[in-house]
Length: 263
Image (tube, rainbow, N blue to C red):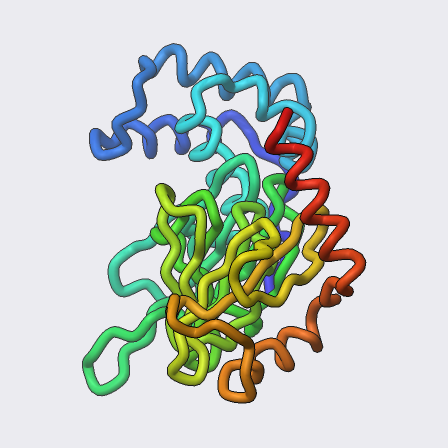
C-alpha cells in the first residue's frame, strides 16, 4: 500500500530532478535552463507543496514530456518510490505517467531464475490519488492505443481506458486492439468476438451501456449469423457487470446513430 512520505519539495529536490533529466536517453527537446526555469516557476507558485503542484500548477509546463517526467518525480517523492524501473529492483516504481493517469508497478520477481511480470499495478490519477489499489489488476503500459491498455489478472485479459478505468473485466483468453482499427478483438472460451462502440443492426450482436457509450459485442466469424447457446455464455457473464440495452433502447440508439451519420 502506498503511504505519503513527503508532502513538499525543496531546492535540492529540484536539483536532483534536473540532474536526472540530463540523461541523454530522455531526449527532451528543451534546454537545461528552460527546464530549470519551468520547474522552479511552478514549484514556487505552489510553495513547493506537491499536491498543489500536481493539481493546480503542473499544466503550466507546456512541454508534454517534461510535464510527465516532472509528474513522475513529484509522485515518486510523495510516496518514496522509484521514478522509473531499475534493473533488479525490489521497490515499486512508476512505469507510466501522463495527463490522464499514472501506473505504479510492483517489483519484478524471479521464479527459477526466470523473470515474471510484476504482480500488480496501482493506478493513480494524474494528481497522484489512488484510483485502483494493489492486488487488483496488472496493466501493460506499452500496449496503449486509442482504445486503452491491455490488462491481465489471474491469467486472463481485459481492457482499461486511457484514464485507467476498467472497460472490460479480465475474463478473456486473448485481446487485440490497434490504433487504426475501430474494433477490439477478444477470445472467450475459444470463440473470437469483436467489440465496437456503435450498435449494429446487420450483424448478430449484444449491446451494453458503458458511461455515455454503447459497447456492441458480436462473433468475429462472419459465418455465425445468430447468437446461440454456444456463444451466448460471454453475454451472460457481461450481464453481471453491465446493463444490456433493451430492444426499445437499441432501436432508439440505431435511430440516433442514423441521424448523426446524416449530419
